[in-house]
Image 1 (cartoon, rainbow, N blue to C red):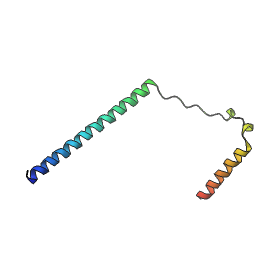
Image 2: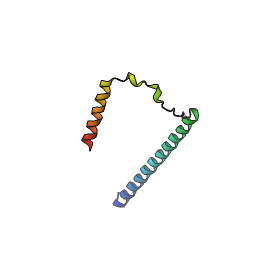
Image 3: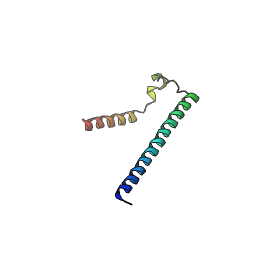
Image 4: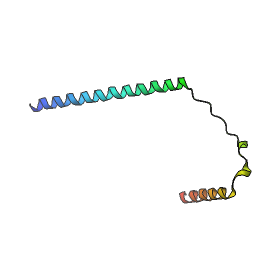
Length: 81
C-alpha cells in the first residue's frame, strides 16, 4: 500500500467512527428526552408544600445542641473571612 492509500483509508475510518458516534449520541439524547416527557406525563411534578414554623415546638430543642451548632457556625464563618 502506498502512503496515499493508507492516508485515504485512515481518513475513511476516522470519518466512519465520527459519524457513528454522532448518530449514537443523537439517538441517546432523543431517547432521554422522550423518556423525560413520558415520565412527566405518567407522574407530573407535585406542587411544593409551604413550610409552617408552627409544626415545630421551639421548647423541644435541646439547648446544648443549639449552642454546639451555633459555635460551629461561628467558627466556620470566622475561619472563612
